[in-house]
Length: 174
Image 1 (cartoon, one colour):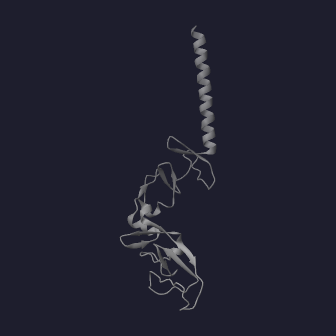
Image 2 (image 1 turned 90 degrees about the horizontal axis):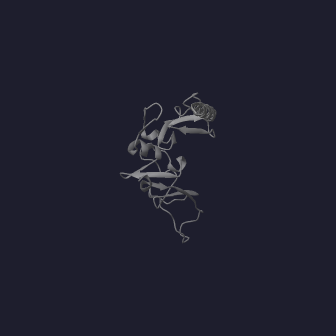
């Protein structure tokens, strides 16, 4: 659904020419003036001055904040304002607090779970993860590599002793 509202922004290089040379000139969709700049933006199947393609809410220059824009209710919006106005909030799987829709772009997602960046940590040692760190999701619990390894070793040790005891009991009953 969001893709229907999203459009891409492309930077186009123009060459400067004099008026009346027979070349096609582009009119800015924002100010309705001829675009004489070296660069212009193409979005929503129209051409724009870099200064004219702005978010209707925060007035940021959309060509500088990314390569996408959103359109809803005749408003051209940056991603943050689109999510703030029309996005769906979520809840952190760890702290259970609300994550506002505009913050849903700065979260950690694991399968269908969402976490604040500060809440995304090992459930055993509470170590926060860095980019590139391995983690494991076991029964909706996040574990660092060390704690996962330790838990696996404990499980193997428990399974081995139960198997040995079980075998011993069976031999003893005969």
